[in-house]
Amino acid sequence: MTGTATLFTNISQLVTPGVGVQRGAAMRDLTVIPDAALLVQDGVIQWVGARADAPATPDERDLGGVAVVPGLIDPHTHAVWAGDRLADFEARVQGVPYEEILARGGGIRSSMRATGAASVEELVTLARPRLTALQASGATTTEVKSGYGLDFGAEKRMLQAIRVLQAEFALVPTLLIHVPPTDDRAGYVQAVCRDLIPEVAREGLATAVDVFCEREAFTVDETRAVLEAARAHGLRTKLHADQFHAIGGTELACDLGALSVDHLEASGDAQIAALAASDTVATILPGVTLHLGLNAAPGRSLIDAGAAVAVGTDLNPGSSPVFSTQLALALAVRLCHLTPAEALTAATVNAAAAVGLRDRGALAPGQRADFLTLHSADWRDLAYTLGAHPARAVYTGGHAR
Image (cartoon, rainbow, N blue to C red; front, side):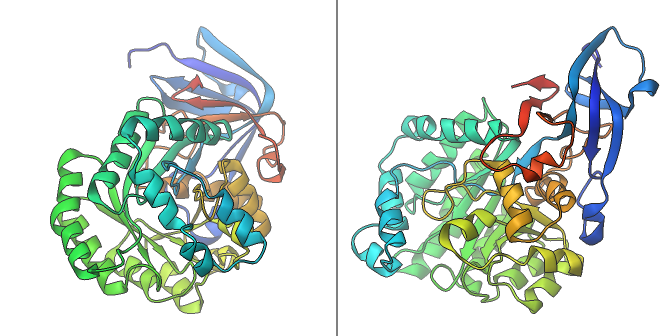
């Protein structure tokens, strides 16, 4: 220990889940300490408890009688992209089918064209305000994926942009194998495994590889090949699965011990049972339900079955323009039927587990001092508030951002 310890006091409620991933009913088991204090040194929590029992320290900071919760962790974003999908949005709300939008040159391939044409510097400039918005909403750590490149140079430029932004934000970079080419799928998958993944691993550009496993994207066998290549090169694995159809992606994620499987709007009993029996985190993305009108992921059923559930924004230009991690938490309550306590756990320790982190997400000794002060004295405003940021201040490593 080298720095001066700081004691944060006058906390109406200090509220936290337990340390590490929480499953099933344990997601509701929060610790609530009234009139609390929090001791931080060198960016790490040293002590938490009632203010009356706090150790003496010369550096004491009054937080103003408001509630304190752990910093939120956004485990699923696509925050690096160029171009926009505003024409798509206008067409879709007028009932134009997605196939026709694609035929007009829109859809995800329009994002890929614009992103592929952008430089690293342009991508950084575009992503910075998006990440700033997520942080202002309460996100103290954010996962960011590539995936709008298709060609390998563009994918690497996306990851290089994330690396540049890591100087300003706590980011977890993921290589996403998102959309197959229109021809020579087998050759593309082979090249991903033989060339792209080894390069990304060698250059330290990502900590995990994600694959979109869907009828419209990659098959289960293609996904398995990519994820096995990722594991062979020391990278962790994640999946997009069951967004539109349950074709076996969730079961594959559980079989491979993936960190998380994300979306799950089309998951049924078999997928819920597989997740409940595995260590893979089920990450739900209610912004997609809101924006596209899809069925909500079965958050309530997953928790009742004993699974570990996380929640993220899925911030992206096409299906979830959600620039608030707190809003994703609030939507998980309304659309996926989580309780406020479960949603807080889903957006903190379970979201950390979904990106392979165990040193944050709870307010406990040894954890990173990432926390939020709210405008309210009651922590439940975090899940209640819509259309405004309930976080008054966002602290990372014990320092206000």
